[in-house]
Length: 275
Image 1 (cartoon, rainbow, N blue to C red):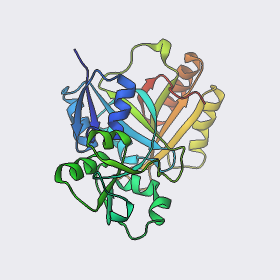
Image 2 (image 1 turned 135 degrees about the vertical axis):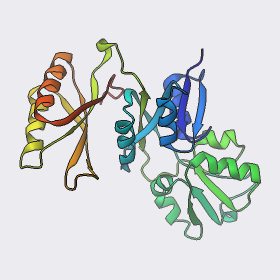
Image 3 (image 1 turned 30 degrees about the vertical axis):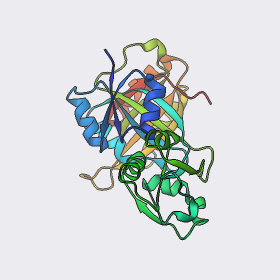
């Protein structure tokens, strides 16, 4: 039976590309308008896995998604890095001078700011998803409007690429996490973990935890703080660590459990990035 994979967005989106690269093409794609709708369906066993963007190499972390993973007690069971190539597309036969507006996700617009600066007469319109704009232009035959989206979106919705690879920073990657209700059971392949903890609001508390990670030979690849809304000036910390020996990680985990408040493992999985 094919796995049912949840993505935020529609066919032709970067989530679609990442899902196909990670799981293969032989999947049932389930499209969602929001990340929370997707996570809710996963929690109700309506889909098998969910793929969620968590950070971008140029724009940083998507902080609300950390909160969703924590709130719904999802497990990170894998990750995938995708090279992001933004492309300027419109109905067939249109050229750059025909375009009055460009519609796309605000992150895509931000990542293409130099190209857009060079074309100041084009009005920028923010949308919820890149591929959905391409689909709308195609279905409604909208003239004078372009989308910024993937090449797959242009192919899927039969649009012309007016300009390709228009992102300002050419080496632009998004990291996606693969979510499931259950954790991975194969400890032999685990060499990365995502953890969450809270600390007392006192000097040096974070430094002590970081020293534990270092002493146990863990490599800190990510640290993200998020304020606790219900407790002003208290923070939760989300960290990613990699390790060569599972025993080192197990030791660090046992120490942090004692020292930190609200300690939680969000996921233990295989590191997909070697550099």
